[in-house]
Amino acid sequence: MSAGRKVLALHLGVLAVLFVLQFALPAYHHTNVARIMVLAAYAIGYNILLGYTGLMSLGHAMFFAAGMYGAGLPVYYFGVGAPAAFGIGLASGLALAFVFGLMALRTAGPSFLIVSMMFGQAFFLATLYFNDFTLGDQGFIVSDKLAPLRLGGASLGFHEPAVKYNLALAIFSACLMAALALRLSAVGRVLIGIRENEERTRLLGYDSFRYKLVALAVSGTFSAAAGAAYALLFSYVGSTFAAILFSIYPLLWVLLGGVGTILGPLLGTALMFYLVDTVSGFTSSYLLFVGAALIALILWFPQGILGTVRTRWLPWLP
Amino acid sequence: MAALAPILATQFLSKHFGGLTAVDAVSLEVVQGEIRAIIGPNGAGKTTLVGMICGRHMPSSGRIVYEGRDITRLRPWERLALGIVYTFQVTSIFKGLSCYENVALPAQRGLMRGFAARLVPGEAAVAGRVHTALEAVGLGGFEDQRAEALAYGHQRLLEIAMALAAEPRLLILDEPTQGLAEGEIAALCELVRRIAGQATVLIIEHNMQVVLELAQRVTVMDAGAILAEGTPAEVERHPEVQRAYLGR
Image 1 (cartoon, rainbow over the protein chains, first blue to last red):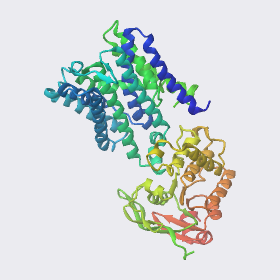
Image 2: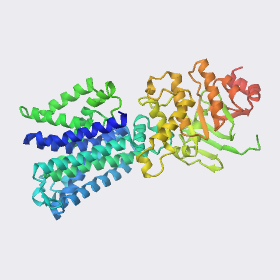
Image 3: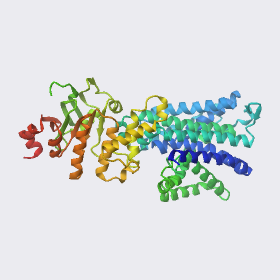
Image 4: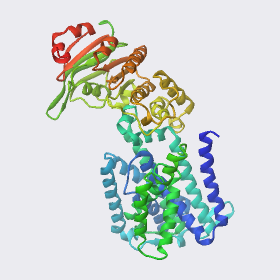
């Protein structure tokens, strides 16, 4: 089997397993996996910037929240339908990422990290400052304003677990396959060149600023897609999703699963989700365990799980 | 040779870094198809000069004309699209990537026209170019090897393969023989001579043997300015050159 076919088979296989899993999982884990898939889409978006372009952001929560508010507010105030709301969420994230990129991509490395964090915090504080409009501190529920999805003659309510699961899977699949396509494209090769040695890439004929802007726009759009889906599927919209912790999470998920791997974000998100879930069962200081896991990771698996697997066993893993 | 149109001309090109004048009003003409060597002691401004030609540094003053067109303000990637390709003095390959990927990045450059081609690189065409470039420098068969695992001499060759894949019309080689063994130097001279069949070559070189063997004309720089220019034999006899550079 050629490398290209192996890659395609692996990723489609993972999606098939996720599809079949919904018939086997008990209710509790059924919801968890739906949530994990949406959050993993966010991590995939984050990884496009960190893993494939070499830019570390600490402000990605603003893109997630832009998608979340972009989708949630029109539903809450105007009763907009889910597909349109999702579209508005995506467009909000894309626009924000583009404008942010025009300004922030003048910096790189640690300065980019700081600038992204400042923008992220400004966005977070704005959701609280405009509280009358955003209902930021209390948050709001969209489910009672959200009309069921109509597909042919069928009416699909967002409260139904199967609808949640399959929509989450659809969005996750789209992000996963789009990330894979980008990685294997000519543009993906340029992004990796920028990650490895930006000056060299510029002297080989590529305007690195434009490529970084494209990566950031895609990354922001994926994050917004996850945020919009989260609002529509799990109904709650609030400022906590714009806070710094929600910028740190995707970084942790990606570091755990494997920076610069396509499937790493899914693995990292799932493991971290269940780590927190399990630990929260007997202590409220679950972040202590998250921290310990990260220290162990940095010490023994600095490339993350799939990064290590790639180095040791599967060099073809994208 | 004076009858031929220059492919490259710099006019009173200068570069200041703070109070330091690295290059001082250099006017240089390179003729289409020649191999031109630039020699001079360390700190003479050679690398800064070619850095301005390929777009790494913006000149403080002066003009650069390439193929009859003013390129002084063009960005590095725009110059590469015109065929000006630079290889680094300090090997600057993508160490973590395979040789194939190293060369594929410049090789796909000319194939990325239009939206579809950016998404699907047309890997067969890219692979063909990569193969040709690696074969040309004698690294055929090293495609899957990680660049950092290559011997130093091979890394230098990979650097040149990357430049060749970009299809240069003016190839700038910055001390390509630095750190190479004697046998490798001979092979490199042979390679440069072959490249010169298709491209104009501007080569910065410390090894006088290489300069004498390859260059049709030699430009000598010292303290940011051109000290002398001529055929290798003329330059070798120049008293100032002997004093300033050859140390006699």
